[in-house]
Image (tube, rainbow, N blue to C red):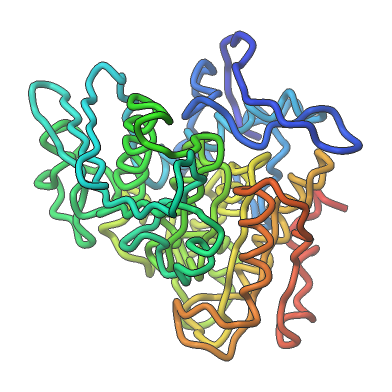
Length: 406
């Protein structure tokens, strides 16, 4: 049983978009974290935590007393999952007042200064604009303008691309306490990279909001993010932690991304909790390696579910054992139950296909990506009921992992 206590929260300000056949459920929000007003749940220690061998119920509140029955309750449950992930795995993603941010666009480069505690961190993000006046929908690409996805999918649709140079926040292999973000937050020595990098993405969105659409020519209601492999995890965390992102495309994220730690623990040579990169997480997470993985109060199907009710597309590649695509499949199918509960399953899809190199989108996955871009960045009618897995994975019994969904 989990234990928690909560504070009341006022009604949330959201950008409502009608959904056919259902009450109005937002496609995107105008705030980074709509559940910020809720108190954190109680965090049981390793010794206190019960063993949960299947995937934890994403609808069950942390005190074990109630479950999410209606969409209006989801914000509170999201706030619990976010805080559990940050407590057990990542460390805090600091909130930042816009008063601390200065931004300017020069020569199609967004220059951002974030000043906290008298120290300044600078981000420089190259923007590639389509022809025309805009405002344009945009994708924040990790590393490159479109991440590892083919840029033509976006440029042909007049979607702007914004390149996130994550190294300006924290290096790929961080030196704890010595990264650019640590100048602002010297006390956050144990922060994992997957708290730091999403912090940087959120500051990009802050800067776009500060300057406004007339200056940026970016449509703030239609932002996407994508990356692949370790950057696929980064995109997933950024989309999960910032509700202003309308579409998240997590390409081959592997362990520590969509993959459920519990499922991966039962597989072969894959990226388990005890066998992932220590730079990306807090060191204290690794006490949950091996048999202790089952004592975590949450798992990564819930990380993926944090994006609900916004749009998420997960791409997998079963040709690489390390990516643990069986775990990706189970976790994606489990996460999708959240969208299904609210009658918006077309906003979450997954496509797990091999026959191509790592981070090289094959032609067979283009239709899924294009459909999600068309629907959630351009507002077009497109078929986003995407739940494809290769024949080698179709016998996987994912339902045995989610008894709460039966």
